[in-house]
Length: 332
View (tube, rainbow, N blue to C red):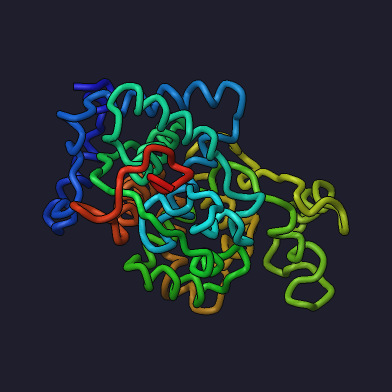
C-alpha cells in the first residue's frame, strides 16, 4: 500500500463511503490502478513536490485544472490537448489563455508514469490526482480519488468559452453548476479553492474603477481592501498583473477565503456574489457562513465536491483512449 493510501483521514473515508452509497463508484474506483500501477499516487505527488520547489503557485494552478477540464464535456483531459490539424485547443479560450497553467508539470507526471507503467494511467486521471495531491500538500483535506477515466480524442473550444466566470452573477453561477449536476453547496465549496493562488488584474479591475459601467467601485468591496488592490493594480496598468486571491494566507489551503468574503474582501465578483448578491441570503450565504465558522466543515464539503466534480461525464470502459502524450491524440 502506498504512503498516500495509508494516510487517508477518517473524514475522507466517511466521504468515500457516502459517495459509494450514492452509486458514484459504479463507473470509477479508488483502487483502479492497484494492480496495474500501484505507485501512481506517490509518483504524482513526488513530481508535484519537485515542481513546487521552483513555482510556489503550482499547487493552486494544478487544482484549478480539474475545474477547467471537468466543466467542458466532462473530466476527459480535453483541456490538455494542443492545437493540431484536428484539434482546436481549449487552451485558447478567454477563460484559459494566459490563465490556466501547470501543463508542463502534467507532462512531467505523464512521463514519470509512462516510465513506471506505460500506457496505463490516463491524462484525465492525472488531472484529478494532481488536484488532490496539491490541496493536501497545501494544508487542505485529502480524499479517495476515484479513478478509471479515459482520455477524449476531441476538444470543445465553444464549451470552454462558457466556463463559470469571475464576472458571472450568482444566478448565472448557480445555473452553470446545476447544468453539470452540481448544487449550491458544491458551488460554494469549490469557490473555496480561491483560498490560495493568484488572479490577473483583468479579472477584477472593473470592481475597482468602473463596476457595472457606473464609473465607481463595487459598493460591496471593503474600502481599505479596495485601496490595497488599486495600489497593486493601477487603472490602465498591466492587465495580467497578479494579485493574491486570499490576502491573508495566499499559499495555504484553509478557510480564510470565507472569512474574507464575510468581510467584503472577496477578490472576484463571483466570490462576493456568494454572500452579497440578491438571492444569496436564501441560497449560498448560509453555506458561506457555515464554512467561515468551521474549517473542518469546509474541508469535508470541499473534498466531497471535488469528488462530485470529478464524476462529471467521465469516459470509461472502451470509450476514448489512454493518450501516450497528454497534448496530442494517439496516432495523430
